[in-house]
Image 1 (cartoon, one colour):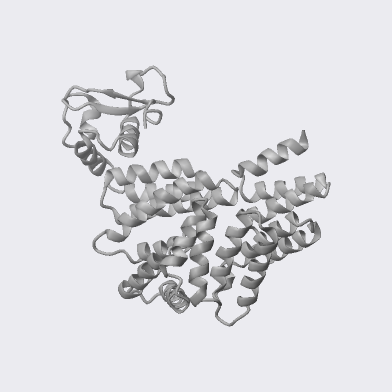
Image 2: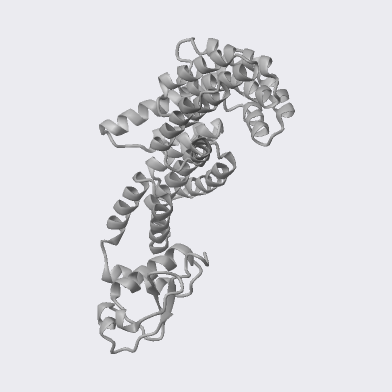
Length: 379
């Protein structure tokens, strides 16, 4: 917070100052924040403008939510710029589309400071954190991704508790919980969405159909069973042996659930039991051939895991085949493309490897691992 506010200074203005007339309800006893061009810049009273004060207030909203004068600053913004929320929301979305997550986050934080109860802004923050986590995970930065997952979880929790209920919050939270393998929460969120969504638009109808499919899959395969969630959590915590115990107990009653075989293979692969892991992933694919298995959501991940096993077992050609298969369903999966680069390096094909890492950076310029690998290859 301190770094973000290094370029903000506080000033007081006399009641008769020209700028005071721009702000209805102006109180000369309350200091106003002014946004400078850069940290450490010397404040020049001759360059003072209402826009700099408004920018300073927005910075306070974003990074100093304990400020004693927030209500006063809100009254200034609402009086001087009543349409600011819509303008800033559009600006934030544009920044995020262009990959500027930091500025997008700051804008949404400012909007939440302007109105802490704005349900849509809270949901937008949840979606932003969710997207940032996905981007980092695609780059192989799992630890960083988990930090944003935690923030997304907190924002979704607030968004789905808002009144009146916001259907979009429950729909998006459901998919977030799915990615976290928290199928119980996913089912609950999507069931609530189906109850409260009253819109009859094409988008709403598509979402309702998709939500119902997922609820049916979770219920039909008992994916919200405590043992399944426990096994996933143990893998995430690095306790693979405990994960194996939980998932095998689950599989005693659910031997044909592909998701369970994936968790089993995942834990075995992390224990470097390559052949056992390979067999588990192959079984997951076999079960995925059954009608309505829902394996489409995890097909590329299974192929990627199989590739890792085959490479470690010394069959680089088979490893490549599985990565190509993964790309057939997710052609812009940067994790898979980066693994093709790694495999090409192991085969001694440096130029081919560099091409894969360049492709990763074209899709996601923020991919640090691909950037480092390309830098080493070009050096």
